[in-house]
Amino acid sequence: MYTVLDIESTGGKFNEEGITEIAIYKYDGHEIVDQFASLVNPEIPIQPFVVKLTGINNKMLRSAPKFFEVAKRIIEITEGTTIVAHNASFDYRILKLEFSRLGYDFKRLSLCTVELSKTLIPDMESYSLGKLTKALGIPITDRHRATGDALATVKLFKILLNKDVSKKIVSQSVTEEKKSELTPKLVSILRDLPTDTGVYYIHKKGGEIIYIGKSKNIQKRINQHFLNKSSRAKKMHNELVAVTYEETGSELIALLKESEEIKRTLPKYNKAQRKTVYSFGLYNFEDENGYIQLKTEKTKIDVKPLISFVSVAEGNTILNRFRREFKLCNKLVGLENTKGACFHHGIDKCNGACIGDENPEEYNVRVGELIHKLTFDHDNFAIVDKGRNATEHSVVLIENGEYKGYGFTDLASQVSKIEILRSLITPMKNNREVKSIIQRYLSKKKTYRIIKLDLPPR
Image (cartoon, rainbow, N blue to C red; front, side, top):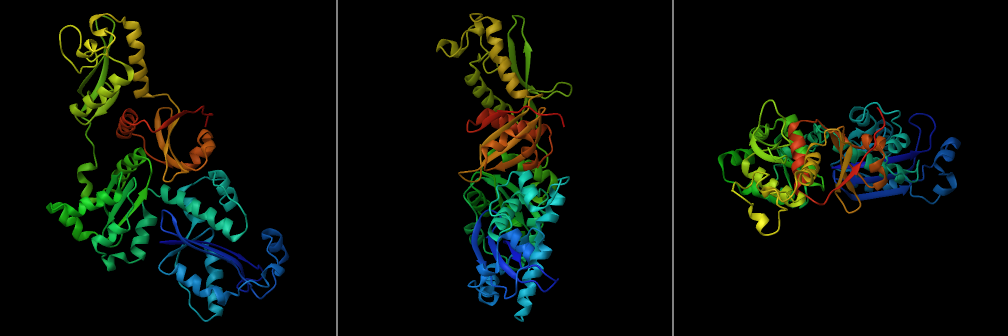
């Protein structure tokens, strides 16, 4: 659990400053669950440059509560949390200073979004909150006021959590909150899990991730784990102390994250999923009559398939979808082996390429469209799908046919702005498996939109 905060102060000599405004948002890694904001009477004058910067003046604070009047609420909302702030050393120091004046030793764990940003979003021109949020397309209002800056920091921290593919922030949080000592009952863990799409992480004592999975209903999937009575499942149950998760909204991003993070983290109970074996692939060739045929075969070392499959059955299922979408012939895609016309020709579902009634040129145009859809070797586009809430979109970026990563945006206009898109996405590795994941998803789902991109040279 985190408390994202921002403090405005009077300015002045070091360790003589006072708080003029504070905003705190309690954030569980997914949404804001509590909040507190207030002007504070510092009982000392505000420096003129601070008045000009924030717009907060001495007159505004005369009737505001003094710090001792809000101290209890601050303690309550931050209890058991890690404080997150942009330039945390300043905000945390000022907060401790105010509490020390009351004779109270205020101690909390803290994270700095400046330092996290330097690690997770390198090579930015500036790491000031104003310039960083602008570069990432994060809307910010009431700049240099506690509420506006704290809300912007929440949105920035959300991006940083997504970019933290090694899960150091979450694993550290699990350790620091000493969940390993609590060993919560399974029913308690289930109660706190969402019923939405995402990736989940099972932790053992110390925060180490021992299993990663994805689901369209995280709570339901974890419940299935708990009900599993196999010896492997029982071993995992005995080690489990916490379950964390990341909602993705998009099933495609959940699939991509699961694949990437299993290979990166190598959880002990994901051994079977560390390497997916695609033993079959879809290949094309031109027959003696000039028709482009498709055929599912065992993968070849020297020839790249149009799309890879785990099994022939999976390949046939996807081929059936392609046949319907592009109005192809059952025989010419290898789904039927008969003499004469295919079955679908008899029910007016095939134009007759199987018996020469449709000329090769017309038929091959549709096969070519399918091949282009599957290869996208030199294509630049974004796959826009549903996000984690009603106002958000998820984005998967493809540049020159390579998967670059994923991200989320509240503004549709950001999707077509490649520089903002590159800053927003969490970079991921491109490989044969992720291409197959994307190809299979595009062949099955209809909820997404494809936006073509004209990319400037980098």
